[in-house]
Image 1 (cartoon, rainbow, N blue to C red):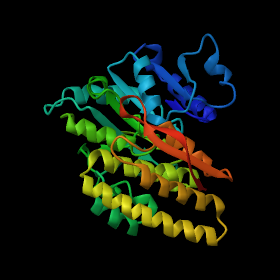
Image 2 (image 1 turned 90 degrees about the horizontal axis):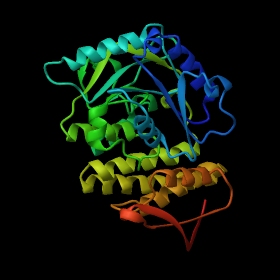
Image 3 (image 1 turned 120 degrees about the vertical axis):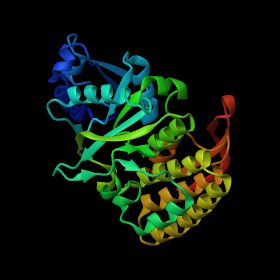
Image 4 (image 1 turned 135 degrees about the vertical axis):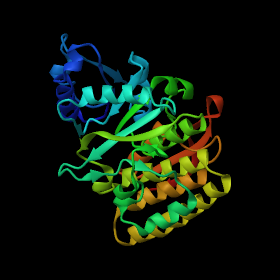
Length: 338
């Protein structure tokens, strides 16, 4: 479980998991990675007799950083990644273990990633599987409702091989994550599971969807309003995926489209007095100028940039190359008001 400012949900889910007999049998362990949440750890999780392990990170490096930290701490062959805001039903862990046994005996080979079903609180199906992004998909998806853009509709989803599965509830083969070297920590949030699945396919690992097990996902992004801060992170993650996993011309075309979008929407938000939204679009415009091979914000730098759109003032940012060619933020004489 990767947690950030969600201790009530993390505690509730931990209690649900601890009620499963597989914990007493020693067949499962619970590892919670906290990405620098404010406030104290709930007493039941920090007590000496607690049945879960809590790893406290000194900063919020993002979802991929948290998953990799949990993977290093865990001992099992399979890692079940769960968002804190999911609910499980009694018998869930036993069902997951039985599905592991099923997939390990699959004649086509053991998968690297297994995605389980997601449901809304009313029991209806929630998006959990998608097709790999492309420039054509990015264009026509703009004509769909936001909740249907990233995920495939339910009627198209069948058990078996898929392009990618959501990180909200996914089963990861340790052999695969060791082969890949972990999730890509350049993604702060969103699209990291898409990039993870893409990397798995590229290394010859199978990614499958299994509808025999499911959880309730309480607060999916597609059901919530997108804040200016999240908009910056979303646009960055999508551009970064195109940069890393698609032909250069597709990245450059999308980058140009997003640049035009950011100028037009930023102007409109300024005219309407939506100051935070206008600053977000200016920050996105800066990302389109700076992002490229070996340069541009990555990981926590993106969070810092996104958080500053919520503060009146100026953003001073330049991008240079740090160790091993990684992009690092630095101050320059150029200021862009956001």
